[in-house]
Structures are given as structure tokens and as C-alpha cells.
Image 1 (cartoon, rainbow, N blue to C red):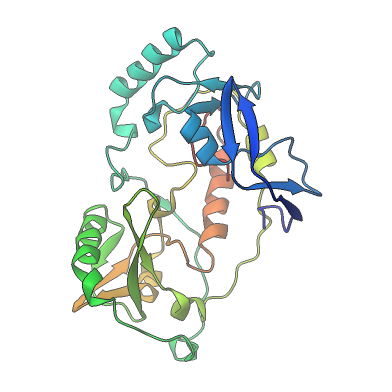
Image 2 (cartoon, rainbow, N blue to C red):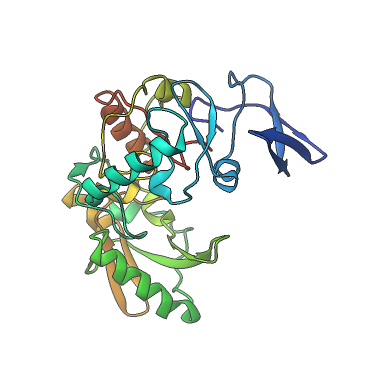
Length: 279
């Protein structure tokens, strides 16, 4: 499934070797699209592992000497002797626009559109409630406290309570997941025409802006309306919290996020790259 709708893909059985900027890259999973209009789709892992950037103005790949996330952009040209000082200057001058850690979300006053919910007594009874596993609770609480400090969560009991589990990511870090099937069962599905990647990329030209808002994965920076927070409660042991922001896994979060992106991209005419822009 793509942003523009379903796409038909055929998987190539054998591994595939490609050369990008003189670097040999082994692709373990390669798919051929039957009806996509892309020349090539590069997974973010290919760009990240190869330490490459994509120049959205020219379509060329370039090597960057710095592996820090804030340096995954190309400024002016591909000459690292020129671009590295410029990147460092931007970081020094606008350091508040760069996150210092995974929970440093900045102070963005962006609100999602309001959603519509059925009465709480209409929650699908087939969606079971279960407790956060005991062996996960201490680590889950530690992550929840960090989310409270980032204003993603607030302490308190919501009207609809959901369980929390931790999923270990490939990098070894734990991912904090709320099972939102209960509220999803009473959330009315929003229908919206989502822009394709080509539409978004065609709007980007030269780099002009420094943004505190993550233009590719800013779910936690988009706030939900105050009267909706009661639907997004979670419980860890005897501790209760509720969400203040969009949550991955909520029925309409993707549509609401893209809606915000459409509003932002309509006012931005810039040149940027993030390791998560391509999926």
C-alpha cells in the first residue's frame, strides 16, 4: 500500500547487488513495481548505511562525511569542504531547531483536525483489555516519564484505557506501543486524498528554512484537541496517563499527519532531506 493507493509488486528471489557512487550495496529484498511511476525507490536503510544524501533539486546522490542526523542534508552543492562549515554554522546558530535526543520534541503549537467518536458504550467488546506485562512495567514507566517531560503524555486517567507493551527495535532500543483497538472501534474513519511522494517532492526546491517541526515523523509534535484526550488513556501497572498528541496506531493519525503536512508544504518551497522521507 502506498500513499497514492495499492501498488502491485513482484519480489525478486535472489539477492541483488547495486553500485551507488562507487559503493557496492547488497539488497536482500528487492521488488519490481508493475504500475508505479518511480524511476527507483531507495529504502532509508540504504541511504543511512551508505551515508548518502539525495539532492532533491538534481536527483543526484551524494556522499556526506558526517553521520549525524542533522547533517543528512545537502546545502548549495556536493563539495563537503564547503557544505560542512555551512551545516555547522546552521547548527550553532539555530541549535534549538535540532533535537538533542529522541524525546526532545521542541515547542510546536500545531493542532490536528478534530475527530468524531461514537459513544464509549459502543466500544467493540471483542477488543480485549490486558495488563502491561510485569517484566516490562519498570522500563515502560521510565519511558512514560520521559514522554511526560516531553508533554506527549500527562498523568491522569482517561475515559478509555488501553494497555501498553514494549517492542524492541533493530537498534536495541525499546519502542513504546499503546494498543489502541478499543478507541479505534468507536473512531469514525476520516477520508482524505493523500498526496503521493512525487507531489510532495515536486514542491521542494532550494533550502531556505530551519524547522523545529519534524517534517517527516512529527506525530508527537501534533497536538490533539483537549476534549479528545480522554479517549487516549493508558495504564502501566497502577499508573495512569493520557496522550496529548497524535499517536501511531490511532485510526486517523496518518491522515491527520498528512493533512498537517499538506498545510505546511503548501507554504514551504525548500530543499531538504531526511533519512525517513523515503520508505
